[in-house]
Every structure is written in C-alpha cells, then in structure tokens.
Length: 311
Image (cartoon, rainbow, N blue to C red):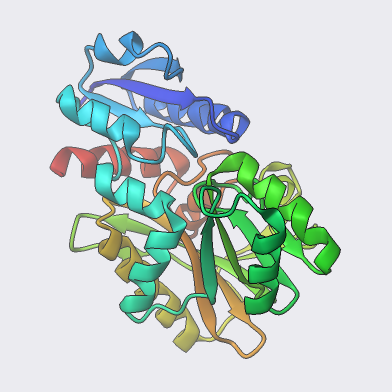
C-alpha cells in the first residue's frame, strides 16, 4: 500500500548531524518502497510545519531532545497524526535515564550503582564534589540525565577531573547521573515487533577504536567494529535478549528500540539505556542487527511502517 509519509530529521539537539544522516537513509528507503515522501528538517520554532501536515504517517528520524523525548510525540497525538515508534510516556521515560534505571532495577534487570544530582540542589560545586567523592570510588562516570550519543559524558579517573566533568554534564541538562564505572565489553540488542509479542534480534558486540564507545566511535566511518553475533555464550545471549524485551516492554516502547549493555569482566551484564529512536545511518547498529536476520535496510523500514499501522 502506497502512503504519504513525512520524515522528520535534523532537529536542534546535539545529535543533529546523525539525525540528518538517519533521515536521508529513511527517505531513500521509503521512496524505494514506493511511498510518497516529504522530508522535513524539523525545527521546534516552526511548528506550523507539523500542524499543517497532511500525511498518512510520520516517520521520526530525530535523536535526542525535542525528538526522542516524547514532546514531539505528544504534539502528533494531539493532531491525531499517526507516527512510527514509541508514544509519549515510553519516549519520555527512556530519555530520563534516572527514572528508567529505577524501573529496570525494580524488575530484576541489573544496573550500575548510581546517584542523580540536580543543579537546583547543588549550587555549591565544592559540596557536590565532596558528596560524590564520599559515595563513589574512582573511576566513575558523570553524564547528563537526558542526553544521547554519550554527549556530555566523562569517565572521571582522578579527583581533579571532577569539576570539569560536572560542568560538561550540566551544559546538557539540569540533572546529572554519577555512576560506578564498569569496565567491560559493550553490546547492544535490537528489539522489534508488535506490542506484547516483541522479539530480540542477534546481539551485537561493539569494539570501539577509542577508549570507550563515544560520539566519534559511533558515527565516524571505521570508528567502531560491530561483531554480529557477539562473541558470548548462548546462555548470556539469551539472558541479554530476555532483558532487552523486558526493558522495552517495561517502558511501554512500541515497534522498535535498541537496548545497550555493558558486560563486566565476570560476564555479568548491566543495562545502560534504551534508545526509542536508535540511529538509522549507514554505520548504525539496528540496521546491522536486521541484516543479520536477512532483512535489508528497505525491508526493515517497511516493517516499522507496517507495525506502526497495526498499533
């Protein structure tokens, strides 16, 4: 069935460049699948672009704030315009790492020990630094509560690096998370399917060229190597896939998501986050997982569309 589909990409978050690349890929695939496509470089200052839309479906190719966090989904809901992917609550919850972590921990999915600090509560940086150093042993991670693509994230190895790390994280959000640093291998699991009947795709192991899987490793060609399936036991594969589907369902995600983990040296996995709008660039992980089960990029995009119509 041919449809008129608007693809929203770009946006104003720190992940704008990635989103432009995702958007191009999505538009190309939808056109190859025979749909009529309108590409919109989304700007929250120009909401008339959305309010005046006359389409069958919106495909959100945005990442990060004002795209992935539920605000845009809320607008589309009010306009009665169907869209691909998760709704308001799931999008907002997944973006709020602190709340999502609590939900995962309460439901038996292992999370790293962490604390959330707010800029309002901590005007005095010296007091905040003391609080953090009293609770955490070096090294530890400092990151914004609501941000993607490791933007604003620092691995703090020495006390004198903490102030700079806090300033960097607070640039991105009023709330920051400090959590224990878990050294290990990063893996990710793509989840796809109808609500209540989702399936996990093969686990992908990520081998970054840099010290950890940072922005450059994620999006530069050759920045990281993706090993599919991951070099782990069948038992651990099943555990990660089970955790991923459970995390997706706990948040109330729809159609697709990607769940990131780190596996420590003892082979224990810890959930890092759920991405409700994972990257769709040529170097992105979800398309790699789809390819591993024999699904082309175009088939994957069409699957998202068809599942969204069912929902």
